[in-house]
Length: 178
Image (cartoon, rainbow, N blue to C red; front, side, top):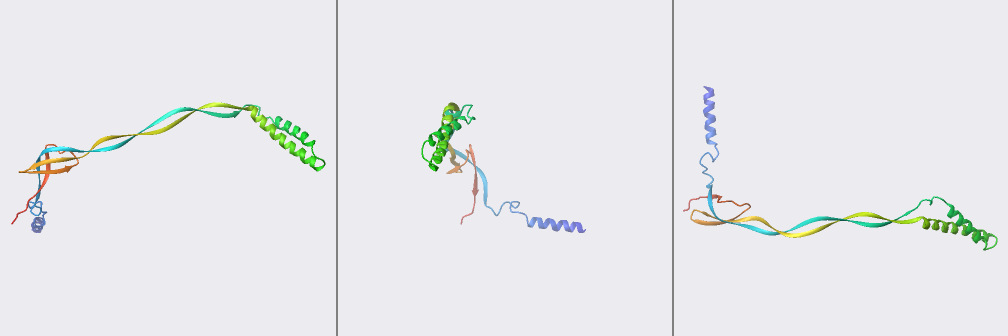
């Protein structure tokens, strides 16, 4: 018997607390229906489109190197000896020693430069270069639709994001007037 009472009480509470959709939607006077589409026109915008493309080409770059034999210090040593001999011809006493040392340093430096100049050579090297070029053009894009439709005896207009086809779903709101 207790089970029967519990069942009846639960059923009564469920009916009283039922959502309005079960009760014929009496609290929301709107409903959905379909209207006939009369005309659909696409809404078109011009859009600027970037079409990047990469162009590559080969350039020739001149590089400089040194041939073999530049590991020998003979030109520097010979230049230092000649420079010391020339520097030794000038000055007296302590001045002569300074002129000899300066001549040796200057002669060694000149010998080094001569060695590098005689062993230096140029060669061409292919180098690939690339650059991105941007080409712009305009395209037409559909951004929506203007829809003309008939519901009952009246004509309506709306904008939609997609082509609705032959029928469009509408929300109808009905209220009594006094």
